[in-house]
Image (cartoon, rainbow, N blue to C red; front, side):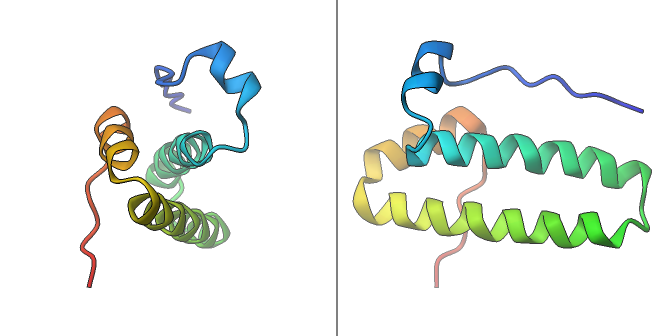
Length: 90
């Protein structure tokens, strides 16, 4: 099994103090998404994990939309740090 190690974008002290922040939640969802994606590359027929991945993607998308509306500067910074594509907003 392939294990991916991800470099933490958020410093350790900040993680412990601010676990409820939008940035931390998006960061943790992004790590889960990357981990599930690598899992699904090995196990293509794991449909429950696919469903979980879609749910996490939706949660992250809602948080990013919220952050975009509240603070565009923090949104742009987070997108750049996590190397996430900007979604198409209708």
